[in-house]
Length: 330
Image 1 (cartoon, helix red, strand yellow):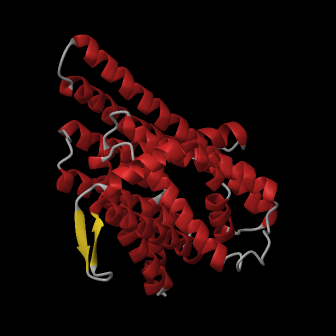
Image 2 (cartoon, rainbow, N blue to C red):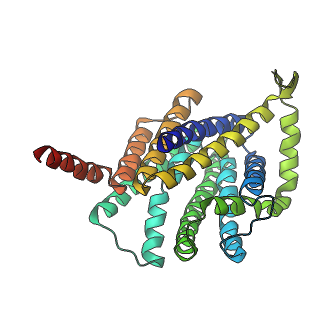
Image 3 (spheres, rainbow, N blue to C red):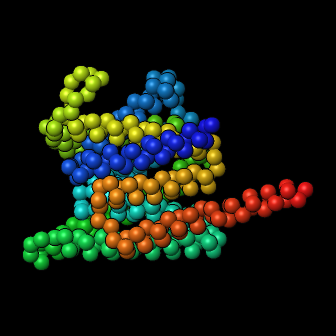
């Protein structure tokens, strides 16, 4: 039952989170900072109450290691959200972040001196090709969608390139953080919930640097159309409702992934998360009518086929089938 509940939490929580984020960024493309801040505050508060027992329980992993991890985690979260300010469409944003396998493999080879099977390298080529196709087609759309002089179109294209550079940097930084976490867990044991709390609690002072932007969007949110909320028998600006939904669904998503990692093998976790990303992508395109050409569909298909090949889903099914045949023969 734990596995089934976790899978439901991942699909419902993560997919709903993507929808609520899209609703927010459609009206306020630069609201990434206030969204990230709200998510961090909520998860940090929950962790302080239930994980640290109101501060009475100390960390199992030395705090200095969390400071390093938090620096990377905070940077990745802020840059990923802030990249939406640079003409980055939501589908491209989601596809680009699916390239985490590429970054993990490259840094694993460089830092941990790992070696992989031929299928792993083929999957990386497929994922790279898929992201390349989607990136090139989105670049053409940016140029075509710009009205005005040729110079304005060129500046818009450079603006878009900055967003791509930000996503690339965040991708590599996220992979480096994963390797750092892997080495910590090998040394001190797995403490996922503890890491979740410190990754959201320690960065909170850093949001002071973004306080003006957060305040500006809080004011903008407060001036949006009010919606009747029966629970409080009053009206609340619609953007605050979307933000609340985003916070709750983000928490549900993270909790679902955490439960899944404790109940299932990493192969199952990766497959579930991959399918969740694909479902979110399809919904984003269809419901929000995001521009998506046949080339985008081809790139998306190649990315996800490569991801499934990386997780050895087909290889993992074969042994299971052969074991059933052996049992029948016996």
